[in-house]
Amino acid sequence: MVSSGLGLPVLANPYPAFSELHEVHAGVYAHDLTGPAHERDGVDINGEILFRSPDFLAWAFAPRPRLGGTVSTNGGTSLAYADLGWTIGLTDRIFTDLSIGGAIHDGSLGGSSPRDNAYGCRVNFHETLSLGYRVAPTVSVMLSAEHMSNARLCKNNDGLTNLGIRLGYGF
Image (cartoon, rainbow, N blue to C red):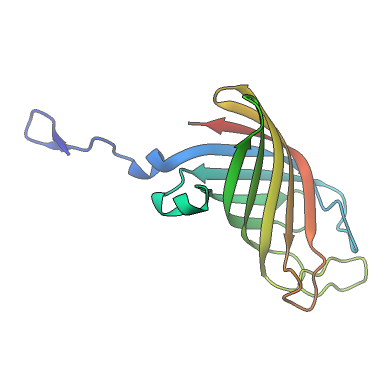
């Protein structure tokens, strides 16, 4: 804390949580591209925030924690997730980005017909994989895939795979 000169304390950074914010991603996905069952086609909206890697994760190649969500615009399954992710530079502009974590979703657990997805568990694993291009030092475009399933930990495990394009903005 520093003084304002009037004897009143002034915070050097009034929003300390935002100083840990590292990047944001937003984009659109084609909904549920794989089977065995398949929800109806549609467009999903995706957004996520990425935080700076905390020091205690240095041993794991400094993954960045991320929080995000994918919202189905056609009544299909939507999800919210928390992941750890790594960005690996392939050239000065091209990179790959991957993450793994957990998701909670609003889809069917059992499926009412053979064509309905049955996710088995309300909380599942969540993974993403992206190939990106840095348009500018703080702006990137990524071809991205996300997958959610339970790794056969529950009776049903149809899974959900979305594919699309996202933009990234770094701070």
